[in-house]
Image (cartoon, rainbow, N blue to C red):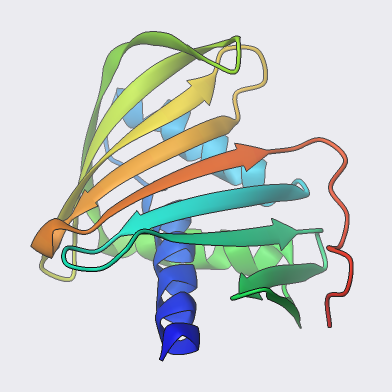
Length: 170
């Protein structure tokens, strides 16, 4: 049961990454650019998902450019996954979702100056609201927080340095 929930959380995390693409406003261009830039680089992400009535779940994902590694429980798994696949999914979501974005302020993530964007998304009848922290230096997303229907929340943090396959991944 926990493995199924972790797979769902992983799918949610991937959906959130893709969902932050494609907004249709000038302020959304920065969010979309950050996501496309991320798709072209190796990166690691940590997601903390809270579903009402259940304990928070932590999941990890690592994209190396040719594979995606994801953790279920304590075990790492992998699947072939390219930047082009991410770009293709993002492009499809961009065509299907309606988004509005606006700058919500300036902050710092781990000491790095960022611009925070508030994003409202309507996708297949499901609304969500998120905030995306985009680095002023690199233009990459460093953090995303999302509120979905039913009260589910997800906080994703990203890193781009020293990205390697996790030890023991298969």
